[in-house]
Image (cartoon, rainbow, N blue to C red; front, side):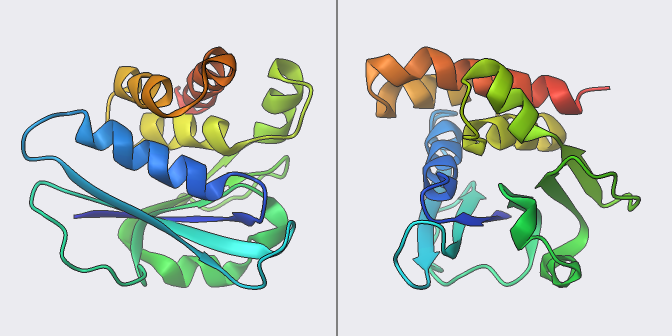
Length: 174
């Protein structure tokens, strides 16, 4: 099972990204199962929150929160601390939306805020970081993420989000 923890703040779209990843994985077809769910603290915009995505080739019966993940994504570097490394499985990766350079081979830094400003004029980084995750992990093809966006988002948001996914993927490709 591939397990992902999404860190963000209320209103940043972490749960949306978690669901899109699951929806894209299911689009792979027979034998592709996904589960995505949020965990909110105080339910208010800007409060730290987490979301989870589980991907497997068998039905997923365990609906508990993920303690150790293959990938942890931080939509906002203000919620990134050294404690994040304790959430990783061996060989896991952290993807952090930051301008900083983080010199740890387990960390992939992406300036998602800059990319969002260029694409949208708004600091919305969830689908940018989703694209970065897909490029870094290969858990699902980018075209299936685009398909999930087309199936779940209103038409007026689809093109911008697909562009954001592609830009996020491009940011982590060598």
